[in-house]
Image 1 (tube, helix red, strand yellow):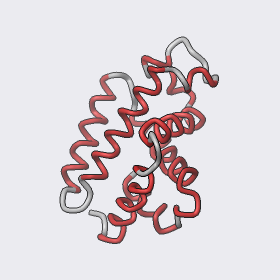
Image 2: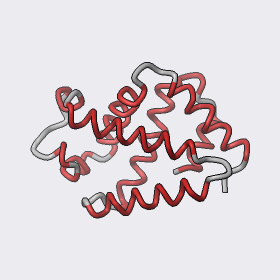
Image 3: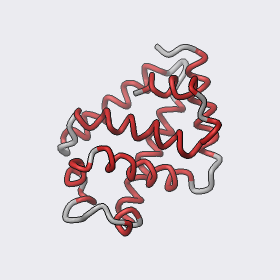
Length: 141
C-alpha cells in the first residue's frame, strides 16, 4: 500500500498533466515514442505496429494516436482509484495486463512501459517533477 504522501504526489502531478491541452494525445504519443525507444522489439506485438517502422509518420498515425489515448485514459482511471481504492486500481491493472498477454504482450514489456511512463512524466512536467514525485510514481510501477 502506498503512503498518503506518495498517493498525493502521484495525484497532484497527474493533475498537472490533465491540465495540458489534449493531454491524452500529447502524453500518449510521447509515452509510446519513449516506450518504443526502450523496447523496439515490442512494435510487432501491437496491431498498429505491424509492417511499419518507427518513423515520424508512425507517431502521427490515427491508430497509434487512438491506442495512445486509450492507454492514457486507462492510466487516468487508475490514478483516480489511488488512495482508499488502491486495491481496486491494482485489480484493474492486473486485469489489463492479463488482457494484453492474450494479445502477445509479455510481462517483459511491463518494466520498459513503467520506465517510459516515468520518463515521459519527467519530460512533460519538467521542474515540477521533483525527486519525491518520481519516487512516488516508481512505487506505482
